[in-house]
Amino acid sequence: MLLVRGTLPALPPAPATPLAARLRPPNRPAVLYALLAAAVAVLGNLLLQTYLAPFLHDLAGVTPGTLGVLLALTGVAGIAGARAGGTLVDRWGAGAAFATAALVFAAATAGLALCGVRRPAALALVVPLLAVWAAAAWAIPPAVQTRVLTLAGSAHGPQALALTSSAVYAGASLGGALGGRLLASYGPGALPVAAACCTPVALLLFAAAGRRRPRPVPPRQGALASSVRHPQR
Image (tube, rainbow, N blue to C red; front, side, top):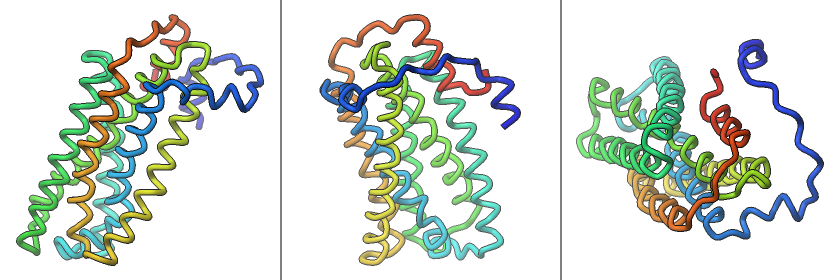
């Protein structure tokens, strides 16, 4: 809390906005596609992450003690991935950054699925795949936030970011629900396969959002996007 207070720039509070104005950004197809892409990408991530304990136990016989270490590892990898995602957006743009993170995510989940073919899998093989999977999953949000801000424009930037958070939580809820059904019906091995299958859908939706020419973002809005992507600044 102290680190956030001392490093994030002070921004004036936004004026009160009526509900109709808050829901206006999704009326633009490009913004709606970007929000759907975020929801699908998070769905694929949480579909596996929610049930990581039974999946790892079935895959490599991971015990509760080892699970705690692996969860900490994926958390650190996720922080590094989020930071790298912002850097990729700055260097390559939102489209290339999203595609790179999504494809790496798909490759890592496909690797975890292949490990399940010959159970029990060695932790020496599973752990690197887990780290890459977590980093790639959390490298996706900066690209989504940047594109949504650019498409919505400065007038609707705060509302668009709020809707992005709502899309993320909707994807997380759906991912948990779908993952539970898959786990009950087909076993833990189905989870990484389904997670990887979400990637093409998310890529198509994000590409559809990028087909429309984005509106230029004023410097102040660009600073807001930078602070969202790089909270340590």
